[in-house]
Length: 214
Length: 214
DNA sequence: CAACCTTTTGACCATCTGGTCAAAAGGTTG
DNA sequence: CAACCTTTTGACCAGATGGTCAAAAGGTTG
Image: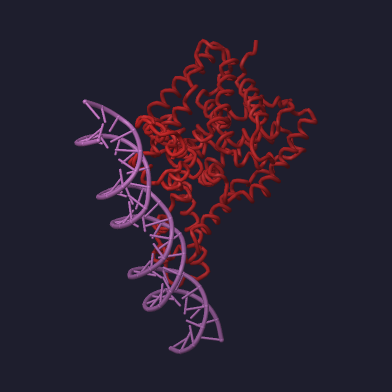
């Protein structure tokens, strides 16, 4: 529909790019809200101001569109995982990681939600990616944690479970917003809420892991 | 179908009770796995070894059945929330709460998953319950935390965010099992995994909150 | 055992939804 | 501008799904 609101003479490549992107963006929103099964192609089409047939022209099937969204959002989700290295000190690296993760929950809640729903329902579409890409990332990060422990920069806690905890508690600021806002009694989470989350989590993780703050 | 495998002369009250319960139980499993929209009445019926029409005879509509499941599982989920009181010392109460929560994830993963999916998708069906029952619980628990802080039994952390963190990280052991098992490289989580979770979380929460262990 | 209530079940229906198609409209390129 | 390619779109379809219904089977109670 972008076509109708902008000038004539639009290049086909641009049309294709714009439409694909808009469909992906709207699809991400709708899928995040209603899940794969709860989403109709028509709902996405309406959000994108396009007829359903047009959406199916760009993405042959609903499943194909979903997978495209999933991949796109997964990249966002896994973005700053490799920032932690053996050389960096946990007191900086862990804090930074938590900050990044919560920022992500704030700025890309849909990525987090789609990802969470996918896993919640057994990770059918994601199983392979989890087994390869994420597993590699995970092992690498655990190795970094272990190296920190060996250098006695932190206590010998379980790297695996530490990561689970950080992931789940940071993601909660995206996934559970509906709950969080109700319990905090505000319409939406504001910057202070995210700051408070960062504050509590860094404090808890750093102290909990016995990271020397020297 | 229970009817066919057991003796004749079953009382109607029993039949009703048994069937309702079995339908609820199977429905909880299926809803947890596929979500509300992803679940068909027929799928539940098959799991319960009953014809679809029979399921609809007990629960007039799919939505009604879902709400029944939701309520049942919500009670499980909110079970041991009131164990923490101002009198109890955080070092015991917090540890116990974490233990209970993780046990719950282990024993009632479906309750957790259904609840999580519901919130993830905006808590349409739950909004009212969250605004009343859960909100009350939440405020009460936060008040307990505040009283502990006032007694200087722990550092002045944010009670709200502490609770968010405990909830999300304990629930993760139910909701994200599909991911956790893949990353740990085992078919299912075993007792040691849950123990490790308990260990890490109590350590992290107690140290993180500066709970005096005197 | 007989009149009555509850449960079971197959057949059926209206609606929704993912996906197809062909024709028209819009760009591209020599 | 003319032949050609890409995009747009309404109409259409087959299958799935929630829900209904009436008849049969199974309990209950005097």
